[in-house]
Image 1 (tube, rainbow over the protein chains, first blue to last red):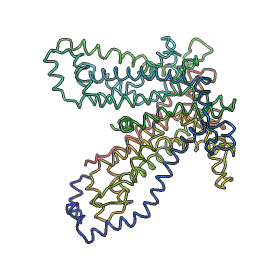
Image 2: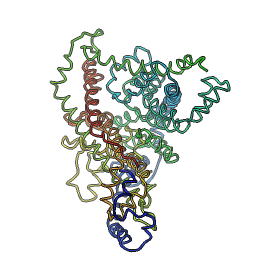
Image 3: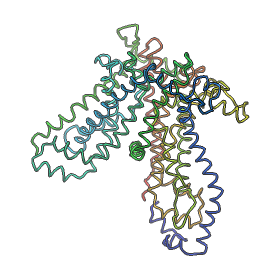
Length: 311
Length: 308
């Protein structure tokens, strides 16, 4: 159904809508009807909206305020606000539970793998989008096909491939795996992005004697910045939150663990030790920085993540 | 300009293609090969045993149970998530009371709701699963949910949630819905924002109420976005690994009532005597199920595009 066909329909829709709205009469009563119905429905819908907002926000707030309570307090009054707020559980989680080390490991892994993903992904995408050569389509579909299959399926062979390469249980190994598994979507998205950019600027640069490599880094990358930022955010969050790959490929030395592993372990440990406030502090450490970044850059984050869903 | 073109192409493709070939494609191919062997951690060499592993899987009740849980997730989680996402997005973008001449408006505070609803999307599945494990704490006084029910005078509804075999899976699916609704609110909001206001005005003048407007105008025009969302949700539901592994009692318990195929694969390979051959075969079975889902989805969603 197009706009045109809708306006071709008989009835009040024939009139230019903005004019029709100003006229009194049956049109206005239609609007009133919507209003009248609106009061009940508004209360109803606002109720739902508020309930869902509370359902999302309260558990997160609960984790943070519980981290300032003592474990005994959490057990006896799970809902109450901290009466004597103290941050002891935070330092416990940060140092004794090694959340600081996991945090730094995560920053290192995600930093390198995101930069690597965007660099290699954009390079491959640029070549695939802009140059004709034998095998172009084949390589493109090889990359894009990777979006279709579940990663968990290849866990066993992947474990042995990384073991044979000597990168099992190492941070560089994790970085390389993250990059490889982020390439399908990055190449897919960036290829279509580079296709939308005008060719004239790059051609002018080539005529002026710039090499292909120089044209790419000095002209195409700056032009492609919006796409790179969107997919970069997508990759940062995806890799920051990765759990399955480190669980299998980085299980050896706890010194090399990333945040999600540390948190899962803390959750198990707490079952033995009863350090509930330490667990909530660990949760807050894993949660608050990401939420803070999101609140500051929420427009970009929402655009980056939903860019993944728009074909 | 032709000069150096191929050197440039090879130079730019070499590293990404090499990484991808070694770490993604070669494991993918090896998986089929390993699935035909009896390879376990106990024997260094592999023996080819044909399709034995597949035969064992077909006769393994645990596999069918786990697959059934994935299918349940595949049916229930996307429907509930997308329905809630559509409902909230409609309220936030179209459902508001009209003021002045604006014919399409969201409710007040729509921007705020969109930010809050999106929170779980930026958090890792690990954070969400560990947090909800605490919320579902079975103790009638400790758990957030149980103590809330107690305070409301609904003690009879208090549960051991994840420990109760008949509702454990539903509890986990509820968290999956909770975690993903916000994404679809934002996605569908973007879709609804691109529907021209005149279409809504025309519907309004025709006397359509909001429910009719939703089903006759908004939903048909959002078909493509909803189909994409369905595929995304399907992928999440086909996985379920982290949620179940972290939240369920005893990795897929109680009594395997929450086990899912990816978790079964993980346990087969890395916990139960390193049955790598069998785990690889489960991986191939998963691929087949995923492909069936993809083909069915494409079949169902193939219709002519609506342009506006």
